[in-house]
Image (cartoon, rainbow, N blue to C red; front, side, top):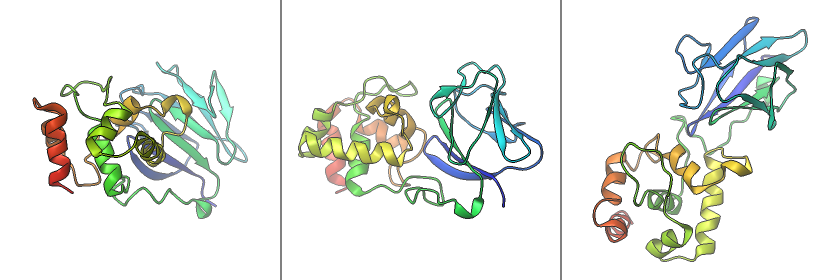
Length: 217
């Protein structure tokens, strides 16, 4: 039996076997588990081996370490299925690698497998975004519905699906702004590039976005 961490970070999924007595987690490349997450400290936390399982210890990180929504003040023993939150990233403790089943929405490239309409909704989120800045005010549900000529209810359902596919499981994370930030770090399923996003939300705004979506339909 090999204990593992199921790592979801910036829209990508991977499995990390746990080995040795201690594994560090953080943004710096020297860590055993490196997370390229701006909300993660250079040396953020550590996983330490106990006689029968593993524990997680916060290493005085800037934004804290959470297990199942509760902040870790010192050390927290882990049970199978416990969810560790570090910055934007989610780490799930698996005590038997033979039972691991990474969500089928993650492709071998770590990019969520999106339907055609989900890609359209995701692209529409970027209307009005300023290049190289954090997404603060993505397009509203109604604006997306107008561009795609669908109902608001249909857009809301697509957003729910996208939250799940980008591993945004906590209620506080399930917002259009957070989804846009997560999606902005990767090409959309190898189909849309950031250049296409930039053109889609260019000077002609929503009208140009409509033309882009029609061109790819």
